[in-house]
Amino acid sequence: MTAVAHDFPSTAWVDAYGAAINASEDYRTASTEWTHGSVALVLPAQPSIGVPEDIGIWLDLERGTCRAAKLVTRDEAQRAPFVLTAEYKHWKAIIKKELGPIAGIMQRKVALQGSLPIVVRFIKSAEALVDAATRVPTRFLDEAR
Image 1: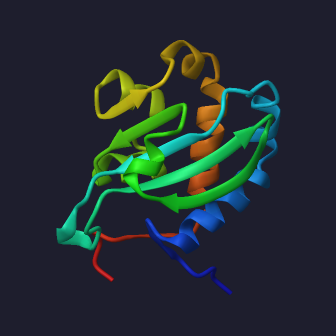
Image 2 (image 1 turned 90 degrees about the vertical axis):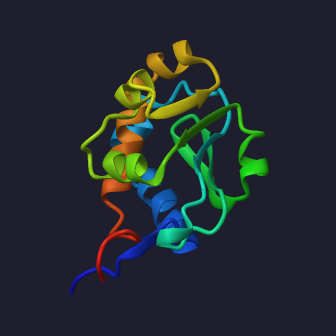
């Protein structure tokens, strides 16, 4: 039996992502010292593929656990201590492990609001968050159905 693929982004995808983060021993181990607050992932609108307005994914992260994962507005997302903003194609590349999150920041494909030194210090956490995303059965909106 194959798992149902969730549209990225969608409430179902974000719920599955939060569960995948909490199921990740790698994330738990790499993030036991994370006390720097929530992380928000922002995707600018891309109406041509069905993302009519900017959207945010809010991850309430604390000491190796994801206390909440939810879809939020861009304005709500901007309140997080760490905000990562990228075009849909770059988020897709990150989820498919074709682009690393830190490399994306350095290449200016991902914009970071927040402390880069803290993000770099927690590079293993960032990698584990990406690994968790790859475990979510995902249907990308820009791919044929």
